[in-house]
Amino acid sequence: PSLVAVILVWVTLKPLTQRWQKPQLLRLCIWGMLLNSMWLLPLKLAGMLPDNDSPMVLWLNLLNMIIFMFFFLLRVTSAMSIVADITDQNELEEGGRREGGFFAVTTFISKMASLVGPLYGGIVLDVIGMNQKDLPGQVAQPVLEGLMYASLLITVPTLFIALYFAYRIDFNKEQVDAIQLHLREKKSAGA
Figure 1 (cartoon, rainbow, N blue to C red):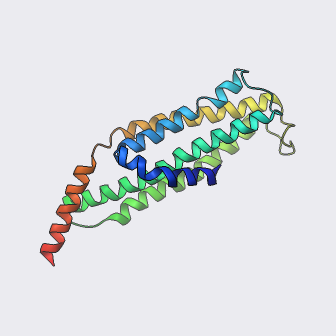
Figure 2: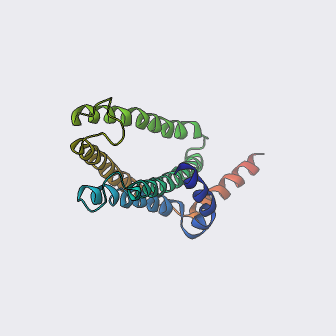
Figure 3: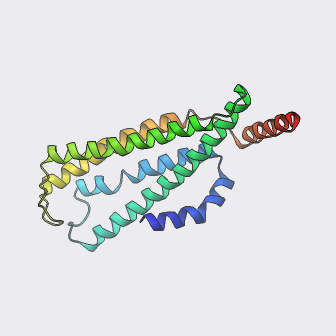
């Protein structure tokens, strides 16, 4: 799924960025991840999908993962580009280049997610009673349902929080172009 998603992002990135502004694309990605998280597990919990040994469940899981990774990778690309634009804006307003600080914050947030995710997962596995010796296909249905509820419990609220902050980003390409033009003029005047 990750490789397919990388190829899809590579193919669609240019047309998507021509169609939407970076903040709009970021919000689209978060909405995509949110909506994608709300179909497979809820349908499975509602008993509307076949048993786990059905090949259809495997294909639906792969589709879900491809969609998630597509929006996730596209979100990362958009977010990093937005951070670069914010860095330019800060340089124009404050007079100094501080991209190291901005990108350090994004790296810190990524590292925190790398820490909190496994911590949450470990706690969930203990709470739902997952046995280390259970092989795929041998996990009890209540344990599987616990995993699905735990996934939804963390994914949906955090994506809504991300949406809240994504809607606070309010600039467009013309503003970014104007900032970059001012920076170029300032540098050429100083040289």
